[in-house]
Figure 1 (cartoon, rainbow, N blue to C red):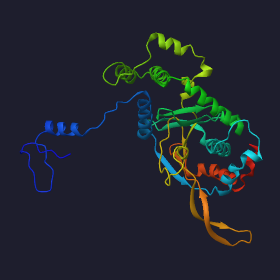
Figure 2 (cartoon, one colour):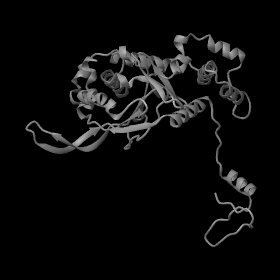
Figure 3 (cartoon, rainbow, N blue to C red):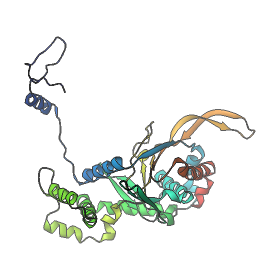
Figure 4 (spheres, helix red, strand yellow):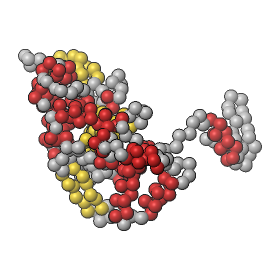
Length: 334
């Protein structure tokens, strides 16, 4: 926006008029605004966590683009080659492949604690693989849900877990559960001796145009009477040990890829999976000769916290996925 402070409004042939004062400029801008949407609980949590990520974490990202031609074909036949009680989607299959990769590179599945002032830090590698996965909700918003203990779940177990989460989401008041998450985070800050930040958040949540609207008393009691096995709780929304975002499941016709994504602290590794795309590729035939053919490629963005990891730490993860994509028949035993 261009503003002339002292001079009167001036126009020239073929140009627009410049507002003479800040007040006039503000009024002109207000006319052009078609909608104002204030942050709700979901947007507040996302904005806070992602801002903390980019302010504190030195990100390293790598674009991994494996040929998944045979793997995708094997997925199409999974219903006839193996027996599963629940429907196995490509999203579920890729989640299971990622878990296999993490088992080959367990150091990626961890949390970091770092004191920048004293340059002291530690990494805790975790036995449990809890996958934080962004979930597209019926209202169009995204919520990151924690899939607990994925290291112990076979393909059918993952499919069952995901189906049950979908059922529980239908019985969940999103504002209420996200309020519980936010409140729990503030209690954690208070226990760390951080007082100013929680007080600011409480004041912002209770006052002004952006205040949070919760269920009224009786409605809240009725909601809280729903068995926690039938709705989401803050336990389902707490950060896991790794984040896996599958944007390919949202828009399968896309032809791009995520080049960078945030790592949610205290995690040290994140993955964004794109959509399967057809691209020219070089394949080696049985007689050793090579030819260019149409391949199915799956772009995956791998993000590392450079305080904890170097690029070489991701190599075992990619090598394990390369093995799976090269010999996809093993998915029938998952």
